[in-house]
Length: 201
Image (cartoon, rainbow, N blue to C red; front, side, top):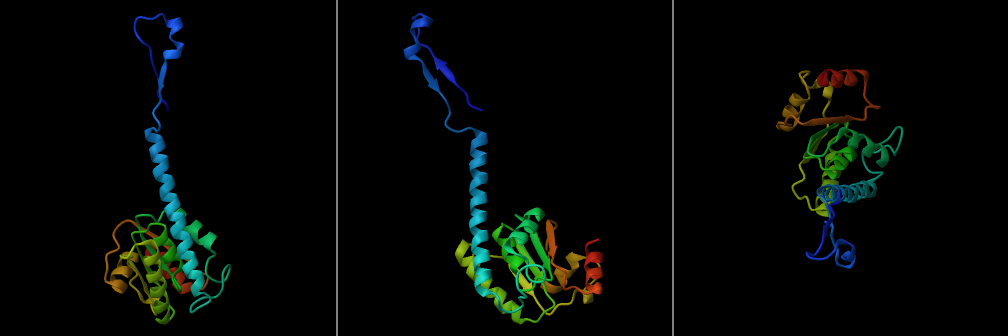
């Protein structure tokens, strides 16, 4: 809200002082400053997202990729919708069935504190993911990107006690308490789906 102050010189009649009025209006309010900060954050996320998706696109259709859309990796639009609904910024993001790490790259671009991915396919995907991760880190100036992909890992064989235990077992890390989880599970077996649902129940 704007505050307007009228300053009237002393000793003159009110009807004659119109030309001497000075109107003082703050150029920005507290709410305006918050909006500017939020806008800058959104612009930063938008830039980082575009960079992350551009890097991923340059690596496709590489290893671990079945195309884009229904039976392949999520489209950039659907991936972003999922990650924004999860509110990944500042959180630990975990992606089960991570393939070659598109959701993980997206989560880091949108401000996730860290991201862990678990994938059944072979370790060759780790090489691809690490190359994309390095390019993203250089492009956005976050050289401490804390994101790791573990392949050749079947969640059916992991502890049924929960996702915390999965991360501790696979990565030797404590994911903390502020966790969000994604899983594109169209390729999961029934047993794998049961294992995941049991772990997050």
